[in-house]
Length: 357
Image (cartoon, rainbow, N blue to C red):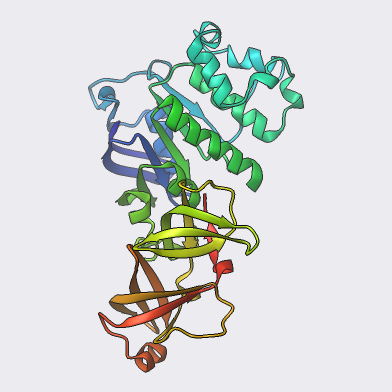
């Protein structure tokens, strides 16, 4: 999908990256100021680095110094920014048809599929000033897709939206991925968006790549790569929904080997896969299955690794087919006699489990 080797300096900041990804959706993750947007603008052609080799879908768009330079309008990449940037004097239909060739595309079967996926049909004849933030972002996405891009570039497309609208736009992007099959490169600082949408993930820090891989693998060790403050959780899992217990207020998620995790009730249908996060501090360990507790999860597991980190101990556990981390004090680990292979019971409150998407 993309191959990138770029060194570019601007106003005292240097982006120095080298990576390649088959996608089809690549997430660019990192703190503010890490170089995410600069990287995106290099791919889009809005910046002209002196030293770069950038290939999009096997097509060379930048090879400098001395080589290929494809201008932005010929790169076949569509950029959607944090702000929708719609033309206020045009209707929704006018905005969608603005790009070269988009008017004819809008009337085609593929164009109407885009309209259907993004739920734009009721908005076509409305003035853009009357649209909500989420509706405007949907129009911006539609306008980008109707230009028939080889890659969709997304710069934190949900950052200006409230939580409910952000989930709505993320759901639409998932539909775009699954139904329209347009490769995407998207910038985000939200771990849940990466888990839900990305197939591959590049983590940036101070303009350099510090980690790359599947989001569930890269973000499972947030402290090791210095993004714990962004991830906000120590355990990130992708689990299948087994069933809902509406009376009990929980959704049961499959951890494999006939082990189920009781999580907060969600709307995802059985068989769907969801992302959940959990602080290691919220996992309590005991040597026997206790009685009379409020925690909905008392899960038998085995200790696979113990790591001492200053004044705390990180215990890695095997539960079903999943790995989980618990954080204890050294004295608690000593009193429990924990070692590799120790059988323990992990106690987890339902309220400690965060649904990420």
